[in-house]
Image (cartoon, rainbow, N blue to C red; front, side, top):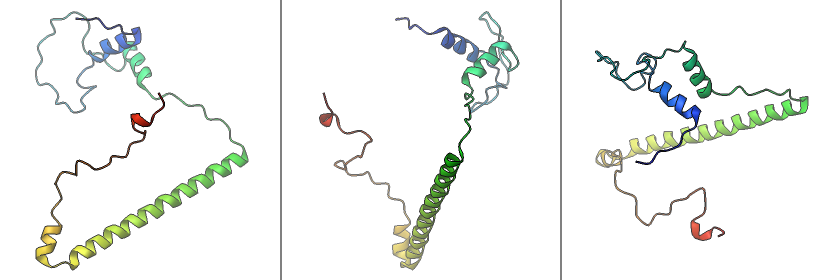
Length: 144
């Protein structure tokens, strides 16, 4: 078995996270009803108030970003950008709501036997020769 070198911060983080009490970390887990006492040495059940847990929480928390004062021109540009983004979003939202409304109307206009078939979800597999658009070009096009 090969040993993997970990930084001291990662070692501290791993040791502290392995000692977290169920009351502190219950996301997606049921609280244990009964627990056997630990046969391993060391402290169990670190709480949020302990200095070691405070260090871990400080490492995991979002860093405080400094806010720089903006000039009047920059504030105006920021406001214009916000208004434009909101306008674009509302245009998209209205477009999608019209399309969904028209889709429902088209389904309602179909005869009942065709409407039942049209309302069934299409669970068939996509064609195997379908192009998949990626953020990066294929490797054959990259500079080597």
